[in-house]
Image 1: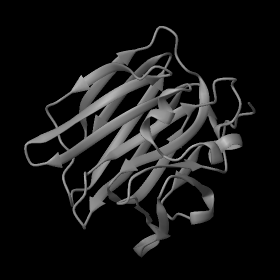
Image 2: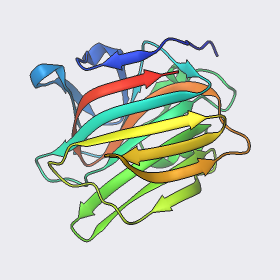
Image 3: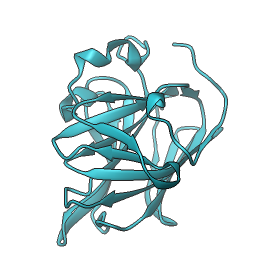
Length: 198
């Protein structure tokens, strides 16, 4: 697939820049924030204007908002189809059902907190839904804003949530290029910022 090597910084969003899969309803809120209403089920939205290759650093700021849902904050990166083609070429084949994303190459960072005594963050590598890092000492809370930083450097993937390192994994055969996507389930999210640097 063709990839872009440009950096990205968004603090005002446009609905037309995103391709939804699943029941997500997208809108623009105060100050240009992106609102993703996926209370009806699981959804993934792909960033349409560009893809990224190689070492990248991703920072996104987000919050689960009322009404109460599963506080499900997930990010997908370096996603391509199994034949190395662009995932946007077959979005109509996917319904937003989570197992669909386990079948093709991508990394998924999951951060959830469905109840006060439940929560975790996980890093998985696909295809195969391989759990490569697990941290149960943290949960996503309703109404709390999070800055999530994902670094990918020479196969080493680090994830920080509000300045705390929650994952540090070295992939011996790292994925190297693809789409970025935001994923959620039975949650309404607000996204305030998305920054990608090479």
